[in-house]
Length: 310
Image (cartoon, rainbow, N blue to C red):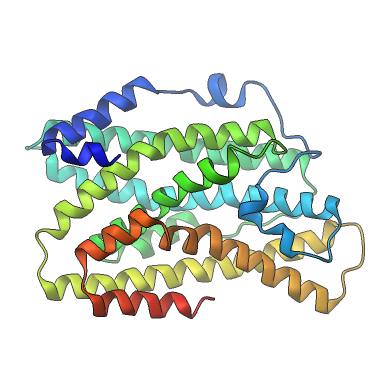
């Protein structure tokens, strides 16, 4: 990825377009291939689900936790890609009468994100056919998108960069190496990763292009918006950790006492905060981007906000 940033600006976008054309894939032909989900397999790997910390659970219960979290993992991506698509379509219009390589890159980006949303809806439906009834994901993606898009573009692009950077590490470091995972689940996130490895390049290009035109006051306000967006993400994670704990307790096949239930919910939330906040916030590239754009007092504000979630 770093080599791309040494090219002239229009060539950077052209390189992304060429890569997009080279790896186009189809949901049914390349990903699903007539398969269904197997409840004897884990979905989310231990490095993301953090089930090793759920010491009161049996191996079968830990596998069930990985399946619940895997379903939520797909649904969260379907959620965030709603506002990512809307924002990139918006910023793409700024290239309409300018760099056509940039315009094509952003159009392709949006098309691929729409395909991801379709894929994740399909995955949720397929999981619904094999998992116990009662799973809930009650977050309205349009309502969330409207709330996110009400914030400054700098903050939305920074959140998007953060998300698409952690996607890279999740797949390479945790999903791909785990031989115990559902092959279908792995393939879903293999093809998702292929697209996101290009999208994160566009994110950074657009982030830096936008940032170059901001005043110090505008950037400082955008940092506050970014902090507010992270807090809003955490609110969604808290709600889903509660819903997923309730679903686990109702379907694990035994009585779970209140004290253990509280510990399980705390572990769900810890895992979700790791997956969607801290694994991105600690990503070296994300840290580099932040430090290259904002001042030390602003970095400290972000750090202080993150510290309240630990």
